[in-house]
Image: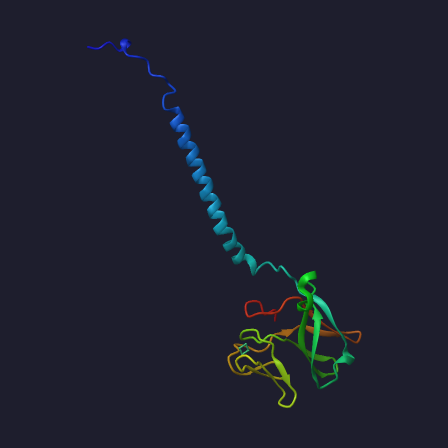
Length: 180
Ligand code: FES
């Protein structure tokens, strides 16, 4: 029979440094996983919620006096993008087509084709908007006539106030965010 009192006493702290290192590495691992999860998850959540948060609310913008747009005509106009930055230069001027139907009845169309965004042109002779890129055609009221565009031209909300034509704008409408 052995006498346990002759055995050297074990130190209670034996193995402690290894456990500490393991804990530390475990915490670093958790931290890195959390960081990677945040880096992947936050943009996904942001994307999913982006349609509920309007970063650039539409603003009331003047297109000038109604007299600039004779009744029965469709004319090119432009407005200054309220969200432009100093270095945007000429691109801060956003063109649009203004159709003066009669009296205070107007339509204002975004210039970008609803297919892939090329600027559409107005042809007075045929009373059609045509897109030079893939042959998209729209009627004078913006309705889709032929070609690849999936929908009518984008209409801005517009109205007349004290003899001045206004629209609600700020960013170019797109299929994902048509603003109409
Ligand atoms: S961009 Fe206009 S038809 Fe394709």
